[in-house]
Amino acid sequence: MIDGAPTAPRVLFEDDWLLVVSKPAGMATQAGRGASDTLEAWARDHLGASAIRNGFTVGAAHRLDRGTSGVVVLAKRRPAMAGFSRQLSDRRVRKSYLALVKGVPRPAKSVIRTPLVDLHGAFGVPQEASTRYETIASSSDRSASLLWCRPETGRMHQIRRHLAGMLHPLAGDDRYGDAGFSAGCRAQWVLERLFLHAASIAFAHPRDGAALTFSAPLPTDLIDVLAKAGIAAPTVVG
Image (cartoon, rainbow, N blue to C red):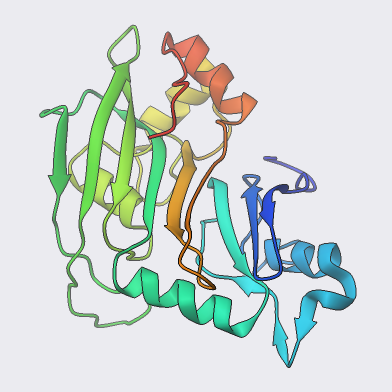
């Protein structure tokens, strides 16, 4: 979804503790400025009477930006939220994203370790931040490249800020990106939103520690963009 009402999230997994979905682009994860049709509101409607248990309301255990599509984990009870949050703090949650960026990164595979200021504070101190990336392929005109990105920390807008800082901003990023590059992507390849997709997530079930991995296929609008750019969409989730 880009303009108009968001399409419904797709349920990837559900049990008594967790709800894992593929969120469409254009849907905010949580309520905030200008956000009414949110993922959490959808989850409350989806669960009905069971959305609230012992005073705890189903909620997102982590966030994706409104313009980002892909896998999101929601907690259906307080211990699930607490357990997932501990894994995030301990860096035991593994996430992989697909990102289309300006140009061709050199080296093709590396780790960005630039500290990032906390965006929630007016005078924040730079905090440790680490993002691994790997180039999958470049467009036929070498103006853009598709990357796997694997954040090792969870700073706000981390992938977007890190890629912009290395002068390979995300296509369609109207905050940190290159306006001319994004305009070209729209004109040439009909890219109408941020090209960032949360492709997979792996963690331990907070109830019993069972290993869980979930993936969300690249949406058709982004597959179409890649086809126009001369890039084959990856078939294996990183």
